Amino acid sequence: MLTEASSKLFSSPMHAKR
Image 1 (cartoon, rainbow, N blue to C red):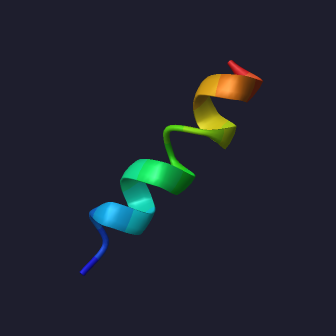
Image 2 (spheres, helix red, strand yellow):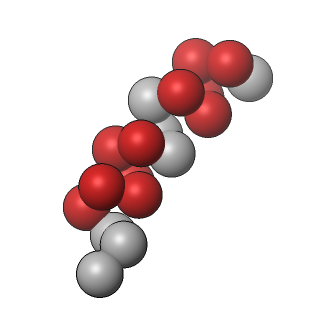
Image 3 (cartoon, rainbow, N blue to C red):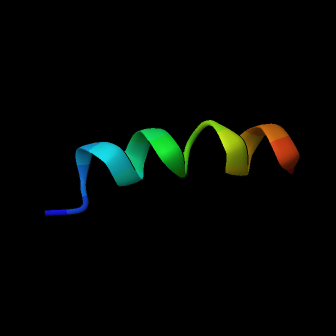
């Protein structure tokens, strides 16, 4: 599923870019 990777890949680049 896309939860662990999504949380890490969406919490690192997304938060860092924003």
